[in-house]
Length: 271
Picture 1 (cartoon, one colour):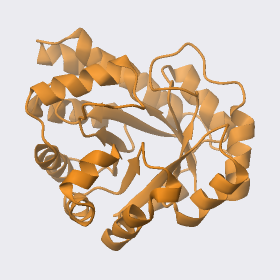
Picture 2 (cartoon, rainbow, N blue to C red):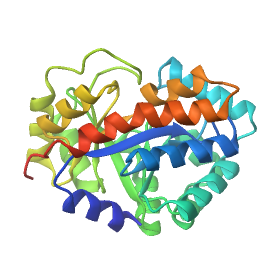
Picture 3 (cartoon, rainbow, N blue to C red):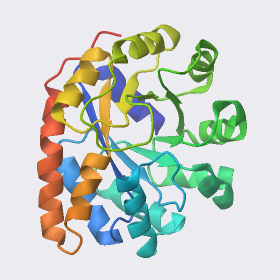
Picture 4 (cartoon, rainbow, N blue to C red):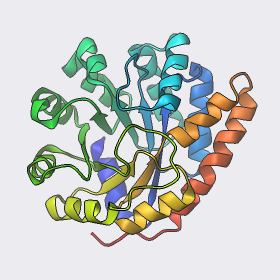
């Protein structure tokens, strides 16, 4: 499946839009419909997270989404069922953002085989250091699922070289140090970060963490990203319409469409 993702990255000359949702938030059917609204808004890639009790890389908006999904009974197996339904309905690459304990408890090889079977193209394990990821990388490669790793302004040259060596698909580049969340500005040193990533690896970079507005999307693409990842700014619309599915769907589309438009109207830097 990762070949489809890599072809999209390689063959697209404008910015890409990758929105994030927590699988099962606020319930299975609404989550499925919200992902459909994102596809209709112009999403090029869908990123989903399995709900987890201790999402250490996430801020309060995503934490609340995890809590809603868990309360609705979203288990890893139920999340996989949702992914399978998404894959059947929408022709979009799918990326997972995971925490390692969920993979470990499911069984590493079993997890990646199941991810492949439901149409997942790539997996980022947010709390797994690359130095300890050998078993995960082996299982991902065996399943044909791209193992994705994080780069940021504080990544050493040695760490970036390791990402270049074992990563596939893309590099998840942090646009704002800290946890996920809605912010007014992205960090000012983005150009230098993307330049370092480009010097080290042939993999494209997608920028996430703190990207909230069309201006942010344009900024990261102009700085060298292949596209932008937006989570909290979209997930917040679910929180604002907790008991009205139609309102949540309308709000999700209205929030996502300008972000997709900003990405698609911004030309990427040549690789």
